[in-house]
Image (cartoon, rainbow, N blue to C red; front, side, top):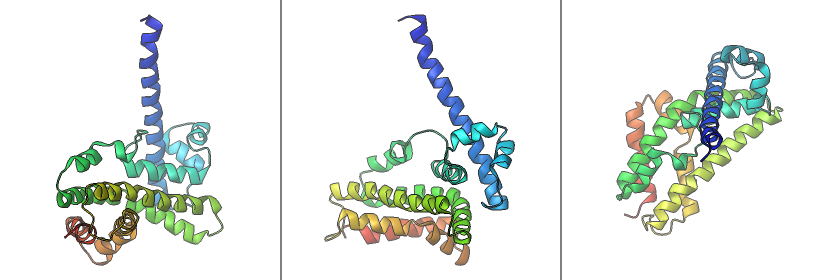
Length: 219
């Protein structure tokens, strides 16, 4: 192996690490401003200054403008980091897959979902409020539609997994199970139970694990 070929993987990894760090800085800055000021009152220039990057760098990371920036904020907040790694490839998901007991499997899923909802709820609320205030903002409306479609699509993986194990209750199809997972793990339900009803996150997590098992699993 030549010295040049040795350098290439290192250089590529370094560039990816730098790109991830930049995306994380941009997302953190945008999230802070959007939650503090609202989506409509947050400008791209302000985000660039807060993140310490050039405005052109911001537009390169979010080529679709502010709606694309909002989606970047949502995606990185959802994942918890800026790595280009899907949820299915993350260790916490693999631990749920490896768990042999369906009830404990769904308890682990409820723990993971509660952590995600804790992170994403403030961002989702800001975007919902902005979309409601600006129904003609096609870019923002599309972002929220894409978020919901991605959530529903993501709910199909655990549903199929339970189906393949023969764990779903009689008569429940994988598509039907996915729809119920999608609804039960919504941000709106999390908000209502923890904010309106005054539940702790631990109580919400316990309820989610119970309702998922009761609704989905073979008795």
